[in-house]
Image (cartoon, rainbow, N blue to C red):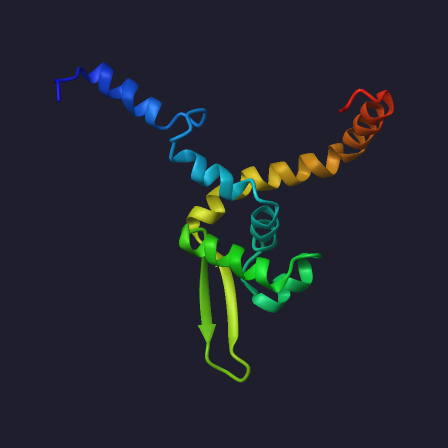
Length: 135
């Protein structure tokens, strides 16, 4: 392997984390955090730990399977911790880790943007669909 200058090494490092490149490792996380269930779960945990059953009630429309899969993925990625308390029935709580908390400003901003601009999006969709040029 030829010797590289510091500038070349920095350029190679930047290219390795260029999300526009197909092999970029950052795409893994972009894929994870762009999932609607991830965003909703992180927002639901923003105020503190919650039981699994509470998350299921708070997040309308999420199936048990999707909730479980998403929580496992977030735990694997270091975004949430899972605490099991032996009792009858067993109590399972989820809480954001410092890494998960660091992501909150982004997911909160996306949620707030969506809530603020949804009517504009609906209007744009209706106008687009009315033109008949969409297919």
